[in-house]
Length: 328
Image 1 (cartoon, rainbow, N blue to C red):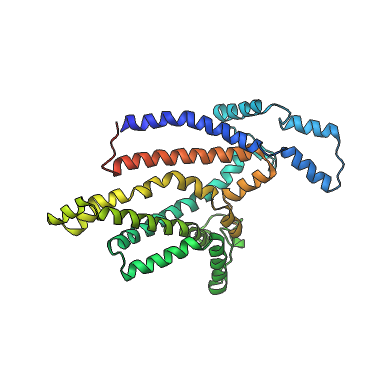
Image 2: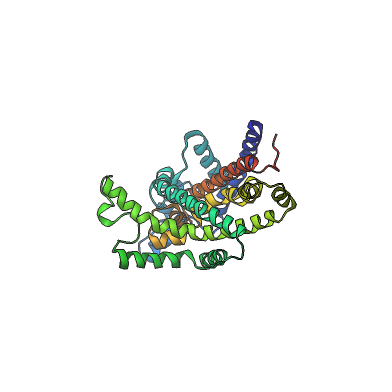
């Protein structure tokens, strides 16, 4: 197993280098740069633009250098000093801007993953074992609703219900009186009261999809000859189902880690904007619109790292979970 893990870690290095090059190239594709956007904003406001000031700002931001030199300095700073560059729009180091959002992002994402697995696993197994039963049809109905309803519509609905029925302030992670307050039990409880909406909204579509995938895979496994043989030998039903069919049908859950991690960081941007959540998605969107290249590039690189980490975890868990996989 150790050799298996080391081999995948070695494979990650050139992959990560290629992803960093692609990330930096992508944010350079749109015409212009941050300074171009800034000058356009100043011109729309009627502010005078001095050519000497433009050249000074271009030199200050390092935008007067070729793209490969900008990329080289960016990567050198990351590898030697942990310096991801400077955010032009926020006028702060990129690392400070990113880490200020990553705590809440990872907390919400982790809770949403736990919700997806905790709900979809038992329901998916039940629907496969009791397929075409009343319970299966009920879960299938709600699963299709979860897939069909856009997350932002569900977010708006839950915000309305929360405000009208429970009288709770909506949007954000805290009530106004607790936003700048020091941490206390009351502030922690207020955070918990606000967390259920984003967790439920973000996890809803993923839960519905996982239920359908697990049901389909487990239904296919239960119809195979080895299951029939196990029943014929008199094994208890729970062993017949859990020992091999469920382990094999769980592959989608484990394989999904590779794309769930980056998806939960960047893929719920609209929902985060609707709910006014201080997460990474809206910040990435703002950086792309403003062409804040170091902030946007660092976010894309971070998503690439999350993808590689997720794939590594998926490979390890699949090797441990699936008896058909052999590693060396």
